[in-house]
Amino acid sequence: MDMYNGGPEVSIRALKKDSMKFVLSNTDLSVANALRRIMIAEVPTMAIDMVEIETNSTVLTDEFIAHRLGMIPLSSFDVDRIQYTRDCTCTLYCPNCSVELTLHVKVNVDYDDMNDPTIDKTRQVTSLDLVTSDESVKPVSDDRAHPILIVKMRPGQELKLKCVAKKGVAKEHAKWSPVYGVSFEYDPYNKLRHSHYWIEEDEKLEWGVSANAVEEAPIDPNEPFDYNAKPDRYYMEVETSGCMKPEDVALRAMTIMQDKLGGLQIKLDDEFKEDTQRWGY
Amino acid sequence: MPATATRMEEDNVEVDTGKVTIVPGTMTEPQCATFCLQDEDHTLGNALRWVLMKNREVDFASYSIPHPSETRTNLRIQTSDKTTAVDTMFKGLDDLSDICSHVIQTFQAELAKGEFEYFEDGAF
Ligand SMILES: [Zn+2]
Image 1 (cartoon, protein in one colour):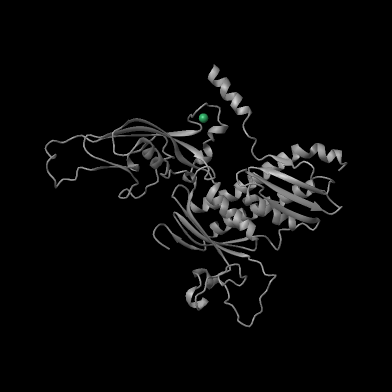
Image 2 (image 1 turned 90 degrees about the horizontal axis):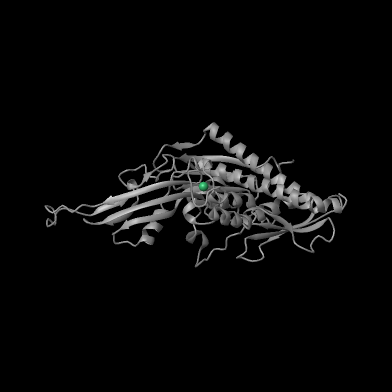
């Protein structure tokens, strides 16, 4: 097909372990927005979805802890290997569609230290206390000095539970989103007048231009407004939770889009084979 | 195993994802139709609308989400006499898929080239 003026162009500006800056150009706003929306809500990851609590004598309630566990990002590099439970043959969960993580922390009472106020007896239960059954799916925390806090315990308390992590998408629950943020900007000088700024006195003073403005020519005050102009450069930045590489999130998003389109074609084929025959085409 | 049997019955009534139907009464002739895309939203609706409008044979293409709590999108297409709404829809899906392939290719080429600031860790 004709790719509409050579097709979209991608230029990566910066890449690091959990974020990426890139410029998508020569395509429509709807395509760039589709990429943004899929990265946020439709790229599958792993997250804790079921928690079976055996003992909980901490100050937090069972559901409070279950909710906190769900929010912990889990490494999802190998998520394609795992099935969605709805597509699986099992009834509740199995190794094909889930990963089990366990946690057992009991803080013993040390009677010698009990009355010494200088000793901090608080035990911080963190993501490091979760023991995974699958090394490819474990809490994201490279920085062992700053793991994710789940609950604080005092001597004599105990927490014992089993978590079941499942594959899912953020369309169902935000905990499955691979990204913490996707920034998206076009037309930094507002030449297209898509933005309507609230101005007190002076627009230029009150609304500075963004960092992306260096990529584009500033407004020529003598140039008339071009009402036919359309956006065609999109400045995007993806920041992941650490569960996947940012470049993989973007690439996966595009393949998900293709999968959706392919799926629709198959369904359309099934649905309208008869119709087109009836119409004689 | 009664438990398994119940589960299988449940599976049979599961909502068919990615389903496409025609909204009854909207295909008065082959050149026009309103497609109902189950489980799709602005993500596909808007991009597909754009790619359809790029097609010279398309006289009208538009999408709407009739109700915010129902996960479906309606897509209306009207074409010239040279083609049909269904064929146009096929072409639209193909074209958008080609654009996606192109983005993937250019993205991978760009990654391979490595002409960007790379940080193993730390701030930008
Ligand atoms: Zn299973």
